[in-house]
Length: 247
Image 1: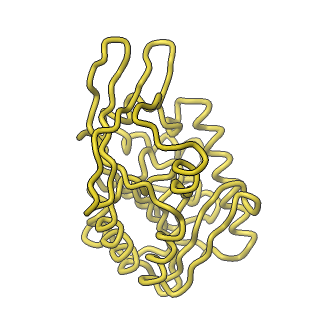
Image 2: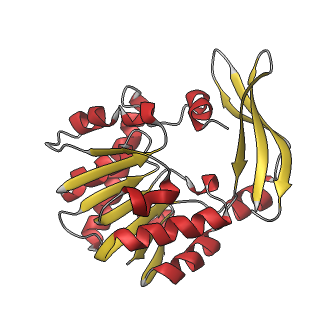
Image 3: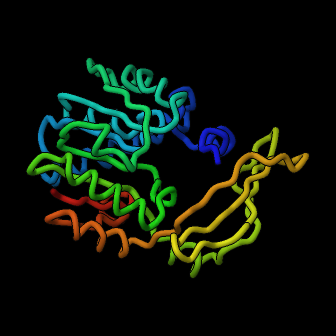
């Protein structure tokens, strides 16, 4: 069940060579600047970007907050090789600490940080039990006034109510191919939907994936167990739906 294969075809906007990703980077910078002006972010923090991909969000935070250290963690080694390009785009004099590993083991992989990020609507990769381990791990490595900041959406409302869950769904369409996903089952114990991804034409199998379609309330309530304070930040306030959890 390769995430590398999935993201090779999904074209998530995080490649520094992609103009659309550069635009996304600038928008993330704007969001973090608003949070900085709100006074909720610690000054000159040690930033940890979890499930960092190419490090687009971590570098944006490092730029806005004049970070004294940046750590990027992801299971995909190829994506992490592009972090230096974001550093150059951001015009930062900073050497990132690059960790290839599983975010569920963050407590064993990373040292103490002041800001931890999970940016890019990443929570579907974690089932209910994974999420407990992730939140507990992040809480254990944050400084006393540290903060865990997540970008998320309410998939219970957005998918099940507004759109409706689809047995077959077009995920990406380009001039060369179309990527579709097909429902393959549901695990009620882990709370995950199983989907298989295919590339058209040819119906070539790309990967099998399991997704937990989280709502915001579940994540906030889970955060309340491991963090002292928590708050949802709505798109009306900052352009994106995000949450911060304070150690």
